[in-house]
Image (tube, rainbow, N blue to C red; front, side, top):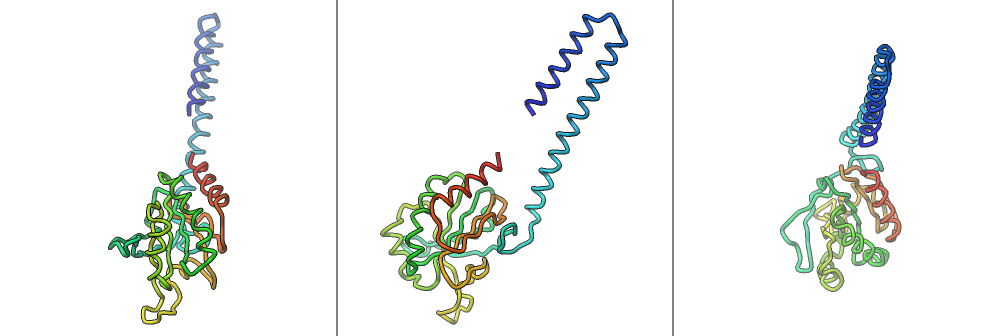
Length: 224
C-alpha cells in the first residue's frame, strides 16, 4: 500500500508540473484522464488481491473437520496436569486460536518420546508468544507422568494434558484423542495447527528441533 501511495503521488506531481509548463489545455486534460484511468486500474488490482486473501482466509475458517493436513483439527477437552498432578483445568488444542499449536503425543514409557521431548520444550520457550506446545500423555502409565515432569520439566512452558481411553472400563483401551487425530500403533506423533486451528503438518514418527522450527518459521512468515 505504501508503494501504491508513492506511485500515485508521483504521477500527480508529473501532471501538475505538466499543467504549469504546458499551454495546451487539451494536453493537460488528456494527462489527467490518463492518471485517473491508471489509478482505477491500480486500485482494482489491489482490491482483487485483497479478495483473494479473504477467500483464502474463508477457506481456512470453513475447512472440513478431520485429521489430515488442510482439515480443521478435531477438538477434545483434556485435563491439564503438572508436577503435582491434575490441576483441575482443561485444555482443547482446537480452541487455541490466534497462536500456532503444536500437539505432541507421548508417554513416559516411550523411549522415542522421551528423546524428542526436549525439542518441544525448547520450541515452547523460544516461541512462547506465537506458539503453544501441548504434550498429550497416554492414560497408560499416567501415574508416572507428574513425577517425570517434576524431575525434568518443572518450569517448562509446555502444557501437559492427559489423553483418555476410548473405553473408560478398559485400562488397555486405545487413547481417544490419539486415535481421533490419526494415531496408529506407535508413538510418538506430532500434529501442528495454524492460528485458525487448521492442520499444517502431521508427523507420524519421531521428529527433531530443526524440523519443528522450519514448519513454525514458514507458517509465521506466511502471516507477514
